Length: 67
Image 1 (cartoon, rainbow, N blue to C red):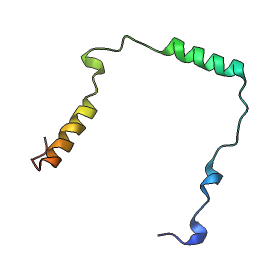
Image 2: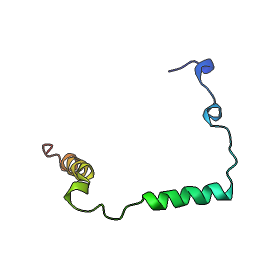
Image 3: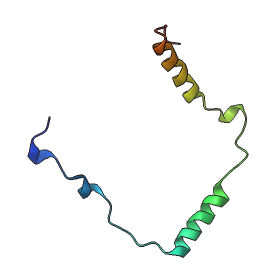
Image 4: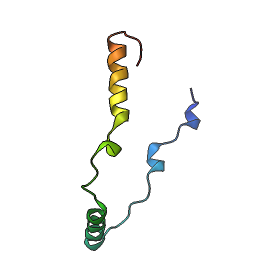
């Protein structure tokens, strides 16, 4: 628990607003497009973490030992 004087307003943590031009937005989008890759397939890029978490959740749901 915290004392009321220790709690800060979350608005203080926001960064200051910044003006962004249309050219900057277009440049950022173009950069993202050039860096995007569609060839990330195969076993090297398989999401094993999500699969492992799903197995753990299912084991807990069924009250079985964890894998």
